[in-house]
Image (cartoon, rainbow, N blue to C red):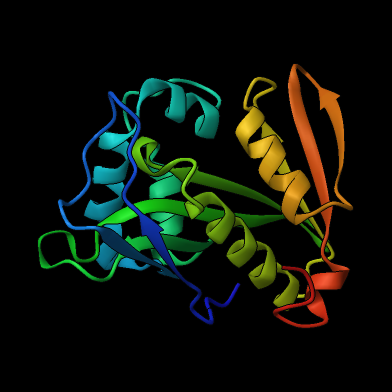
Length: 194
C-alpha cells in the first residue's frame, strides 16, 4: 500500500486525569496525524514503553512487555499502512508519538485496522483523529471494508467506532468483538462522514 495522507490537525486541551503521565506545562498541545517511516522506530518504542499493560492488552490482545518486532518492522518499512499522532508545537516533545493507527490487507477489498493511543491522551480526540485518518486512507486504497478486533471490555473504542462509523456492524468471535466498517461512503471524499 502506498503511504499518502492529507494531514488532519487537532489541538487538544491539556486535561489529564489523575494518575496519568503529565503532558507539557503550557495550555495546549498540537497533534497532527502523519506518516510513519524508519526514522520513527524509536518514537514507536517510546510509545510502547509509556503505554500501560491495559493499553497494551487492548491493542495487542495481550499485556506484552516487548513491542512485537515483526509489527514494528512492517510499520516503519511501509508494509502496513500507518499514521501517527504527534506533537508538532513544543520543542521539548516535538515529534513525540502519542498514538498510532495501522492497517493491513487480509483479503481482496478487506483490511484489518487497529488504533493505539498513549494512556495520557485517551479521551482527548486522538483516537478519533487516527481512526478517521486510517479509514480514509483505506478507502482511498480502494478497500471496501475495514475490520477491527476489539477486547469486549474496551467500551471507549466501541463508542468511538459507533460514533464515526454508524453503519459498522459487530459480532462476537472467540471472545473478541469484530467490527466491520463499510468504507464506500468514505471513498466519495475526505469529508463524506465527519
